[in-house]
Length: 328
Image (tube, rainbow, N blue to C red; front, top):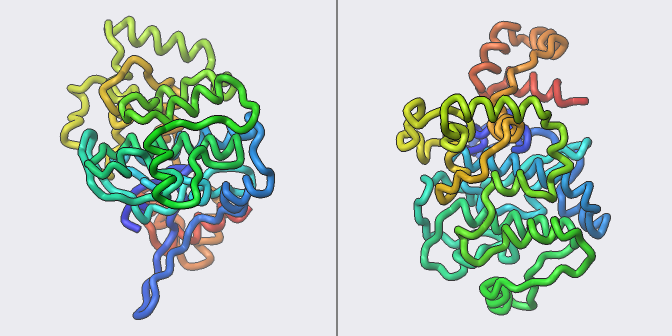
């Protein structure tokens, strides 16, 4: 619940309000009327690549933001990807999530067996961010093929299959899709693709076509002016002198894009569009005046609601506002 209060992103399920009684703790969550991704896959069998791209990119954005908050999810799977009525993605279930620092080695064994990274099974400690990338690869395989890459009749055999890391695609997929999946499902954690590499992958090229040539020219001009690639330091946030990365490591209150470059590999940087979609720096609160009027009628003054929204408060006033704005 603590993490849900801190993490606010359009591709992460939102906690609206919490009520507590002597017997119960009630959480009011954002409505996701499209069900979960598992139900969608069961209904369709598998997704067409074009549909999978639209959903997968949102999952990547949501997971990237979670990592930027110095949090590992550790249970990325079909069941934990909710959809709204317009196929918008909402990552949920932070029950085994953990706040970590980049490079920190942790020991806990948790997650769903079929999605477990091999280093968790080996049980000799692992760096957290890498395990979510493995699970993301398993998730994409399941979206495209309708089943997970590693299946067995018992847990011991399943672990053996995962530790071998060998799998085949049971259906016809494009070479780009297969390459992306294999890039994430790598036995060696540091050989797995990073989020910037995933988002710039050829398979997602069609979803990146809205990035204009003008934006690319602006990025190149900024690099040439400074004589170096500042965006690689913290995803476009400027020089290391402007931001003390050590002090914000492991702090959920900060959006630290440096976390996405898991092994200091800055060769592939984030595009400006991807950076904005991950951090949501571009978003300001678009006030819905009609919802504010209804809130005022309920006894929550207009200025009080706006103040709470700007601070990111979780209370009756903001819960009422968000439920009204999400009602459509």
